[in-house]
Image 1 (tube, rainbow, N blue to C red):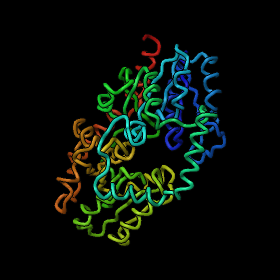
Image 2: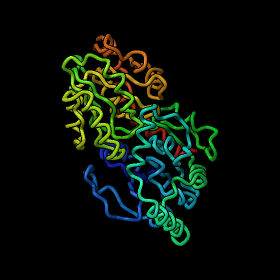
Image 3: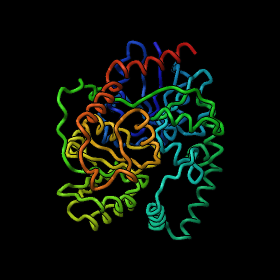
Image 4: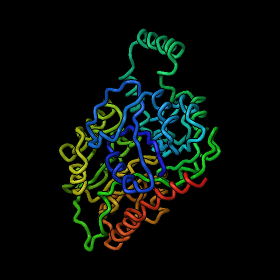
Amino acid sequence: MIKVANIIRDMHFMDGQIQYQDLTNNRCMHDYFIVQWNKNLDFKYMSLIDRVRIVNPDELIHILRNGDYDAMFIHNLLYMPMHYMHKLPKSLKVFWFVWGYDIYNTPKNHPYVKLELLHPKSKIAIEEVYRLRRHPLHKRIKWGIKRFLLNIIDYKRQYHNDDRRVYEKAVERVDYCAGVFPLEYDLLVGKPGFRAKEVIFELANPIDWVPCPNDLPNIGENILVGNSADINNNHLDLIEYIKKLDLNGRKLIIPVSYGGSKEYAYMVKAAYEEEFGDKALVLTDYLPRQKYYDLLSSAGYAIFFHERQQASCNVEELLRHGVKIFFSETSLNYRHYSETGYHVYTVQNDLSINNIKPLQDCEKWDNIKKWHSTNNKEYRLNILNKLYDIIENE
């Protein structure tokens, strides 16, 4: 029996992931850990809380050294204290499943994978967010001195994600790596410290494994704009494209209840309501998964203006229902989904009055069937079993 320690934190997705990995409990036992010094945690978005242990980094290392674990799955490198990576048992096979923020936005100011993430108005907006959040100079000096002293007297309890040397040293300890998109592995090859072999891994939720429908799903006419309050959505730059459209009674659904900052979410809400009035439905409160998906069913179109890989759960939920999706033409999202064979479009070239019309039925069926070909029990269990083969044989 293989034994794997999973390092997690974002609880919006983990119920489904635990249920998915439990389907292989005849071959592998999965344990789940949230690693942090403060053990007070609100499990607001997760129900399988009895499956998770909250441990501090020292406790985790002790458990790994004495628990006969064969491998560790790190679901986002930022969830594992990087300055503890060198303490992991040498016999432990370490798998890093990239989420996005851990390579495109970290280390701060010197990201591991450098992409031009922000469009012009978003670059201005982020400076405004920094200005609004900037504390008086005397406080910043005080906190800077405090951080400096803490790093000297209590180094291990601090976070060092933005220390490039610590980050690269942590990456050196990774044996196997998977991006959300396979092309992301190629972006990592040749980076300092990166030596990991490529594997395939995908988040999954068995509730989504339903038979391919016989009839096209019913969808609405509204337009989903972005997926979160992360500034990488480039919401403010999108306004220039959207305001040229004839909305013709359609609503714009703009979720800003997850990720990012409150200051940026307020900017987006103010800008969209000023430009589009009551046609802009700005979601500032987090919705449970099913309620959110029910709202998505009113969308016949979606616009994602990210440059990096992002919003893939939203994208694939929309693809499976025949929604027409527009990406930035220079984005990793567009490159991945177009090269994979999906019918997708670009904001810069295709978002126009004439193109606010549904996919053709044949295009909808192509997207739906392609989605179902990789989102089924057999395909997803094969992904896990290939990882187990590596753990056992390499």
